[in-house]
Length: 457
Image (cartoon, rainbow, N blue to C red; front, side, top):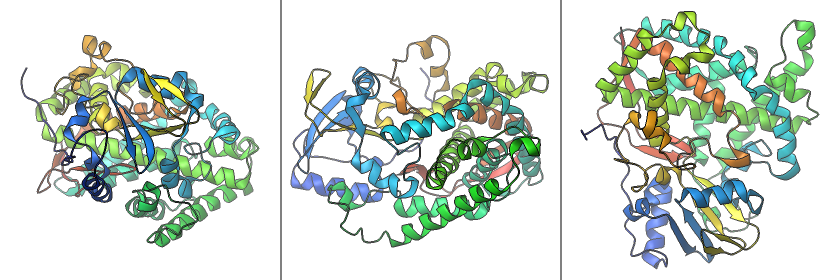
C-alpha cells in the first residue's frame, strides 16, 4: 500500500504506567490539559479498547470499543447522563440549549426544533445553500493571487448559510461581532478550569473567567435582540414566507430564556463545527494534490447544473468520502462524555455509580486495530467494501444515540455543496510557514493561521 499524506499530530504524553496514576502523571496531565487536551493521550491509548482508572478519587472508564460505546450511549443511555465536566464547560454559555439540557427540558427543546431537520425540510434548504456558496466563490475568484485565512473564510461562509436558511436571511444579527465573540469565547473558555477538573464545588470562584462572562453576556444580548426583533415582526404568513427555525422556536411555547439558549446553541455550534471541518478538508486537499485532482475531476464531470443540490452527494461519492475522512481525522466533537447513574456492567467490567465514561473520538478514529494506516489521509476507506467493513459506532463525527447531532444531515449536505461550488471554480493552496497542528478548544482549532492562496481554475 502506497504512502498517503499524514498530517501533523500533537505530541503525546508519557505516563509511568496504565491504570494507577502516580503524582508525576497528574502533573503531566494537568500541564497537557492547559496546553492542548489532545496531548493528554499516550501512544498506548491508541491500542486499547477499555481502560478503567482512578483519577482524583473518581472512577473513570475510557472506551475505544464500539460495542461498549453503543451500550453506554444507545442501548443503556438512560443510565448514563451528561458528564459534570462537560457541563461545566458548556452550560455557562449554552444554559439549557439542546446540547446541554437534560430531562424534560431537553425533550421539549428537541421537540421544538425537530420539524426544521426532517429530510424533506433539510433538502429544501439546498438551493439556498448553493446560492450562498456560489456568491462566495464569485467573491473569491475576484481575489485571485491573494492569500486569505481559510479558517476565517469558512466561519463567515457557514454563518451566512445559517442566516439564509434557518433565519430567512435575517439581518438583525451583527455577523462580524457575533463571530468575534464566539472566537473569543473558545479561546478563553474552551478549556476546562482546573477547579472543574478536580470536581470542586461550583460556588468556588473560577479565577480568570471574568472576561468569559462578559463575552457570554454580549452574545446572549445579541441573540436576544434577534429574537425580540422577530417577535415584533409580522408573522410568517403575513410576510408571505415559510416559517423558519426562529419562527418555530418562538411558536413552540418556550420562554424567552429558552429561545435564547437554543438560538445561541444553533448559531454557535451549527456554524463553528462545520466551518472547522471545511477548513481542515481544504487544508488536507491542498497538501494532497492527487486527491484534490480527483475531487475536481469528479465535480467537473457531474451534471450539477441540472440536478437539485440536495442530490449532489449522490453524484459526488468521492467528494463526500473526502469529507468523511476529514471528519475522521479532525472530529468536530473530539470528546463525548457521560456519567453513570447506577452500577452497571460494561463489556464485562463493573462500572460503579458515578463513573465518568470517556469516549475520545480523536482516539477512536485512530485506533490501530480498527483503522488501517489510521494517521493517514485515505478517503477511499469510505467507499465500497472498505466503508461497509467499518464497525458500527467506530466512526462518530456527530455522536450517537438519543443525543446524536440533530443537524448532521444538514451539515453533510452543506459541506458537499460548499466543496462543489468552490472546487468548480478555484483552488486554495496552503501558504503557511508550517503545517497546523490541531488544538482542542471544544472544537479542533488549528494552532496557527491557515493561510491559503486563491487560484482560479
